[in-house]
Length: 84
Image (cartoon, rainbow, N blue to C red; front, side, top):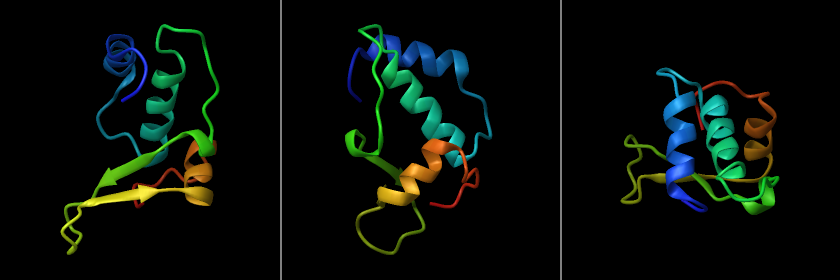
């Protein structure tokens, strides 16, 4: 987690709601990072590293990266579902 951890945690605490879809959760995380108490910034696909924990994966690594067009969809809010 980058930036100021306290400011990011506060934003997440204030805005998180149980049952958020994947797109809403990614957007919330990005908003928290963009307004972390320092100067506001715009974070896009090229400046983010996003991954989800997928316990159903059979591979030893349980994290799945979300990149490129899929990440762009989530940031735009056009893919509200929970499937990565």
